[in-house]
Length: 297
Image (cartoon, rainbow, N blue to C red; front, side):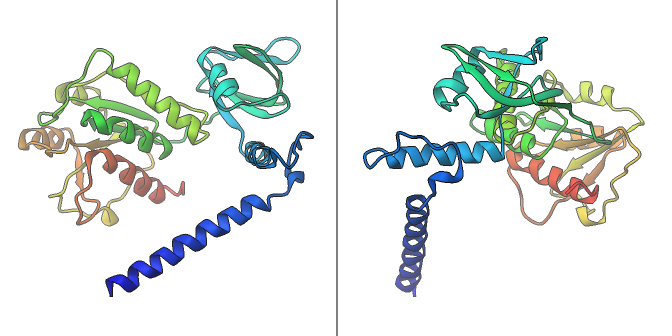
């Protein structure tokens, strides 16, 4: 039985690889930005570039700037690390459309000129992000260092508005001097990958008592806990609150003292299901579930 299963798996994988190769081989050069240098010697690299440009035209690559400063001629400059990534890593060229954001407002348009360490964009479209209400804030217990990036990527692509690092009693890792910069960097990379033009706000680390001091009557506080008696399917998500605060504990779980303190602040313990999620994954699952109830998905 095992050999039969392995045989079917090998056939399935082989078939998918074969189809992918055929699709790449038969990719029509006319789909986008044809390179006249495509010949029998380099047609595969040319087709690869054409596919990249075709995909980029459908979903614009996103880059962040400290401030949008469009000139009178409708030109926006991109320089520094982001420009270096666009030019040397992504190898973007003149004519390809990209999107630039300052974390709130955004512009998009074709690349006008590419220089050694900068490029310019001719602005064709612009706009700003609209915040949804209630805002979604995840209070995330500091996870193991090798899980931080994964956790931040998941929260960012799931649409979190703010992340508060929390030094829980059972957190194994400790907040370091450079932790805030590292978290912000991971969030920015995740936003670029998911084409999200707004960046989640990340505060500095807080203790449990500091967290409780910022909770107001306009907020709704939820604590994910495996021993909660209320399943998520029975939880009513209030839409008249300014913020929904979601507490995610560390790998070792929340202590009885922490549960008591959150309960005194009016927190609702909720359970996402019978399985125990990693701390790095629980926030993502909670955000998806909550936004489904809010009608955002």
